[in-house]
Length: 90
Image (cartoon, rainbow, N blue to C red; front, side, top):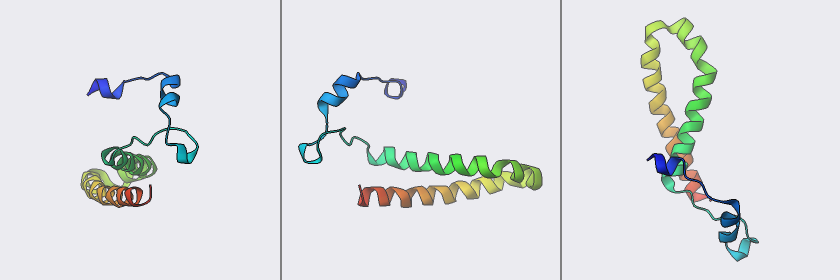
């Protein structure tokens, strides 16, 4: 797994591969369905945790654990909805 996370490629090789000719060149679309799903989950969890963590821990006490479980389920459903939109409208 670490090989796929830290892989590198030279910029000239990326530009040489390019996209299709109908869109005037550019980069190829190589993101898979899994990549888009995890990107959506990361965006939702990152924004939600930074915006609500401080107040929730101060006011909620031990009930925050249950809150995070419920929020994680809601975030998963939202990520799947975003994934479906990204697949339908590339």
